[in-house]
Image (cartoon, rainbow, N blue to C red; front, top):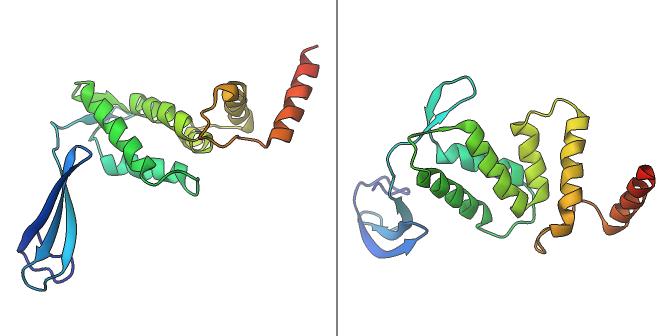
Amino acid sequence: MNCPYCGYADSKVIDSRDVNEGIRRRRQCLSCGSRFTTYERVLPASLFVIKKDERREEFSRGKLLTGIRKACEKRPLPTGAIDKLVDDIEAELYHLGKPEIPSAVIGDVVMERLKSLDYIAYIRFASVYREFTDITALKQEVDTLLSAEASQPASQLPLLPDDKLKELAKSHRRGRK
């Protein structure tokens, strides 16, 4: 392991701990004495993603993490929630036991997990993943979430303030009569 500070190729392990299906190692450079942390994870057999255009691409945890981070940008989520979400999704994909998985399956798994984590992140991800072409499709998705908001987890912020939500519910009831 090269030292990130001086580039020296040798270091000693000071401490090792098991973390999230991997090992965290605290290291010290034998040249400059700087300390740094490395993480080791076991990589299961290769998993390939079948893209929409039928191309096959090796699964990239980094791409998954980037997409989810973009959707969750500036959201009030607990520290580590995104990494745990990606860990869980990756584990679920590998537990399927298939060497190839369609990108649509991955997208659906991500959307399902984001829906329970944060509605706004879910809508952001869905707008790109489902390629909403007009505001009507986006409105339908938000309406679906609003109708299900009664079962919203207590840790999630509402999509709309309570007064606006009550006003919409009243106008919706009037429209049905």
